[in-house]
Amino acid sequence: MREPTWSDLVRLPERQAVELFFDARNDRYLRPALLVAGVAAAVGLIASLARREGLIAVPWAALLLGVVAIFVLRRTGAFDRRPRAYLLGFVMALIAAVVLGLPEPAAAYSLAGFFIPLALVLVRLRPGQHLALGALCLVAAAWASTRIDIPEPPPPTVMPAAALLWIAASAAVSLRFSRRLRSHFLGEWRHHAALAREHSRMRSELDDARAVQLSMLPRAAPELPWVELASTTMPATEVGGDYFGYFPLDDRRLAIAIADVAGHGMASGLVLSGLRGGLHLLRDDMARPVEVLGRLDRMLRETSPGRMFVTLQIALLDAGRGELAVANAGHPPLLLLPAGGGEAVTIGAPGPPLGTRLAPGYVEVRHRLGAGDTVVLYTDGVAELRGPAGTALGEDGLLAEATRGARAPTAREVRDVLVGALARFKGDVEPADDLTMVIARITAAAVPEEDAIDSEEPFEPTGDPAALNPGSAATAGREER
Image 1 (tube, rainbow, N blue to C red):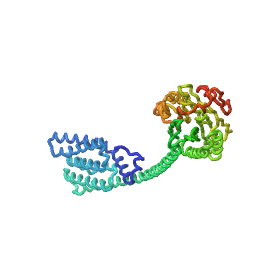
Image 2: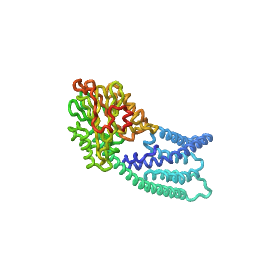
Image 3: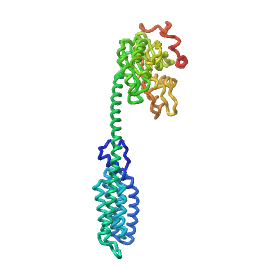
Image 4: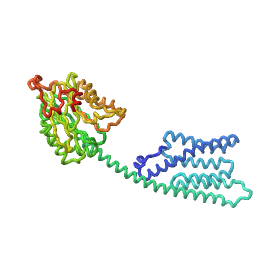
């Protein structure tokens, strides 16, 4: 019988929990008792058959079959459904074998009247069951006492009376131990039950918070003819600290925001809720991402705890101008994978996270955007993902996987390739941080010829040129940062 855990016991009503606890405790003593009784039954059966005493062999055979049956029931699991009934049957078969099978009445009297009641002190049974077994022991001892041949026998009531006193004392001690153990168990059970209820309440609240947070994420990507969108988010805990959102400005412009709150859990979820509300209030200003970052920074400074800060990146895809504009607040730079397998580019200027009370200094980086280009936005949990060897994927590894994935024909397939690569890299290691990615694939209908940026004209990014890295290779971009 499997030892029940507290999580098993607290799911049961009080009475059933007590009985399961007592049954598991009884099972500790039943196995060695079965082994001893099985050996004794085999020896008694062999001895009685050797003496050709067929009637005496019957109780020993019944006891041996009972022991074998209980071992079989224990292995199949059927014993666990009615353990107390099988225990009572075993004890009754043992008493019958002792009284009817032992050739010495004195030995039968001693075992039935003294040793078996003493062993039952270790067993936790209901009062009625103890009384029934005590009565059976008394009857067996009294019957055996009538067969004892003593030269000067005592009065016929002396030996049964001695057995009665011993059996009564053993039963009283056993019942007292049972009451004390039951009282101690119930105290522990009620404590663990209260903890389980509290844990269940917290789990319910976390599930509700997770549902609320997931409801804050886009249910579907906007349908725009010039861009394919795909995303994935995998919280490390019930309530993650990552967020992304789509903000269409018109038929030709789309802003994508991706954010990561320091840490994860309930506090991060609450901060993200406020950030999402701020982004939606400022959605009409997404064409000026630097201004949006500044206003959100002020909001978080005034409303969030001092140690809670947020990284945020806003990418503005402009199909009419063939342009990508990025403003960054402490977030990892996005990846731009050119069509046709050209050299990948990391885009994003340094900037302090939101809510840090540092001088903002946000700048906007612009880059050409053409048909077939793929933009990958991600949170730092992706690059910091660790494998079984303890090494992190890093920006180099992510860039390599993204470059391979860019050959996929659609944004969803690019996402699936990246998710598969992350799963293979981490193996059985659980991520320590939330993982979020957004993939945007510019389709062939992206930029009309008359509206496209003239490739012959020099391209000038906005912001501080020393802090920017547009158009650079991935390695050069990392060196400049």
